[in-house]
Image (cartoon, rainbow, N blue to C red; front, side):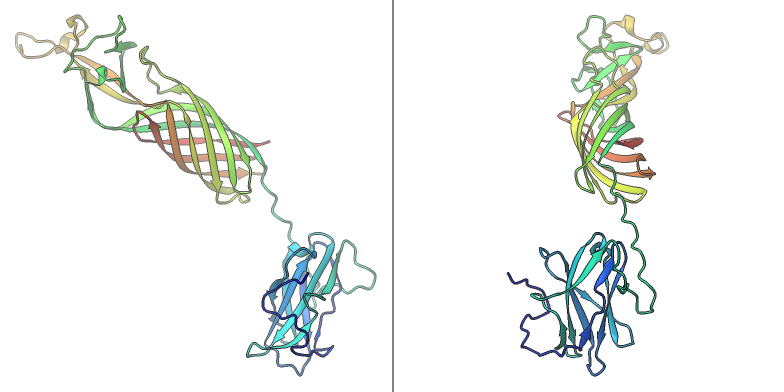
Length: 369
């Protein structure tokens, strides 16, 4: 099988080459060291460019590497440390070109390459690779360790909803009202009944939502891609009514893409979805009670102001959302060592099918397994 490569011809008869036109003296290289491949060029050749074609193992394609002139009649190609990270055999051939880009000299070919043995211990008398300055090649830097694949986490999440202005909230299926521990406007016999047309108005804007603790599991299936799940419990912020009640559990599947996983700062984007209920609290709603006994005496008519209407004040109205949700967020880990990281994330939150958009802030810790 003939191996193809870019920028060089396998037709050895195109330009006959003299044996000493190009010379590479290195035949051995130590494992884990830089490999500056120096190509000596015969003085009478007007060489302007030298390319070295390299592969390690006969199953790979040859890759071209440009070389730099040393000013002393040679060219040097700085080869990547990946070529010397383990024992094996490097195969190469060389092409030299003049100022017009024509090939004027060659050493080896794709079908008959020269070879450098990468060895754990250099043979006695073997010439070590050296830089053009004469300095011995340096040891390659240790590769960055791969991050652990499995991570457990614990977050505290605070959510915040945006609600629209709404009327008759204490008789609406998408709201839950309560006052001093008593349901307002529900069918329950013990609830505080309110009059249609006076069942309370909720102002629009921001509303505090649930606070929850969430445990997480994340699996780095690729160096930057993680799949995971989250399980949690809302311990504050849900409506405390008997009807319709609040579902405090949190179940979520999640996909995370890290922009960086080897540095201490590891920003990411995450898409999640699952089951949870996010309620938004609007305070100080006022309603008209059916039973005047439930009204606040200070609001009822007086001889001085007979037009006043008996009211119930200080009602807490909770915008109740659906129990499904999706989120899209930006966040970051900050790693302390190899197995512990702080987590912070700000995300957009869409509950459905009854929905009020919101945002949520997660703060927590991650620990590698």
